[in-house]
Image 1 (tube, rainbow, N blue to C red):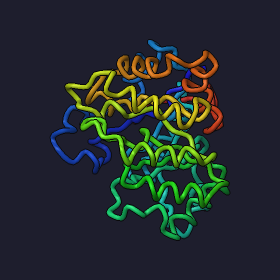
Image 2: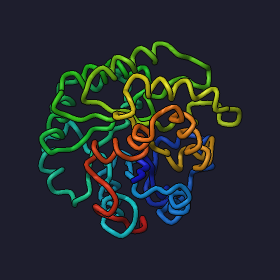
Image 3: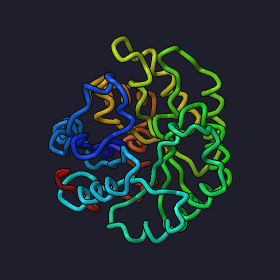
Length: 285
């Protein structure tokens, strides 16, 4: 079983995407549906996917869950919820089946310690009680706070998106590398091998520039806590789906077949407790 543990679907005409805040986003400022994604999955034997939120919106989350209610490869949704909301538990319980995790754009919060706020930690504890995973969308600036939150909530499973966004474009290594290793030392966090091409120079990157970062992820977390994600269609700013898969295959080329199977499916299936056909999908909209 092969799983793409991180992709998006959106329609900017239907819902504003605040993070698309400049002309740099023009190439992806259009509607993306499951039909656009399916040929890429078929070309690489991807059996299932995890669909991830892109806006801080309950409405978007319910739309993504509607996608997961049809027929297709989406086997779980990482949606959005207000972690500080007083009725978080009730809100989560009222959502349709298919929600496997929650994510918030922590990287956009002015406070680098947002994750350690008491109200946020209480909300994360609610997610643990609900049996959900929390996806960490952070940069190196927020990695210390992420470490504090993960350590404070051993009962909650965390997933670090995009390897914590290392500064690939400028060839930076520290403090990202040590912060990632510190996070990896905590057993209740896994890491997505995703999003690295868009942290590199979009028009100039080469595999040799990105592979050291990917291999540091594998060395620190171990293959059993690493999962492949395409970050499609965001990745298309810098690379095609084929390129992203090829990069992940190069990064895992030194692993055993069992270890590669973990990265390309087993870890995601275990962490998100999902797999092919659990929910299925229909077209967005």
